[in-house]
Image (cartoon, rainbow, N blue to C red; front, side, top):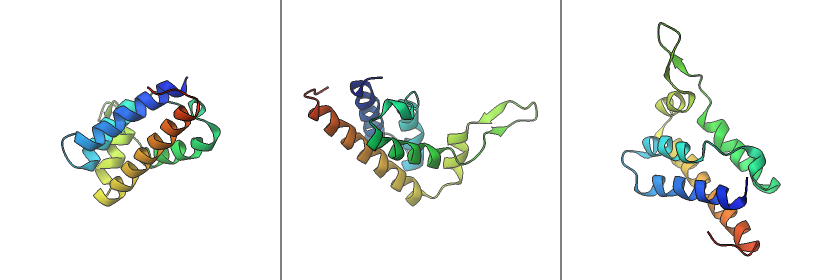
Length: 113
């Protein structure tokens, strides 16, 4: 994927974090949906560990299943449900920092999306 696409998805996530409804945990669910299509390999090598950290923090818990074995809550929702707001705020700050770094790389390529 192109860095334009990465920046587009992260920009949408930052927008959700900034103006979305609910507490930061709720906004992180929406932000995650914006960038969940991205993969580590989509990022420049120097940003890959930041993306992996964010994804690791958001998916620490297993999905919650109902009595039929169907997913009731996904991993991200289950993780954020157990997370303190200040921890979620730290993750949100990392998403913002990653978006800034991706945008800086994009500018360095001479492109602005």
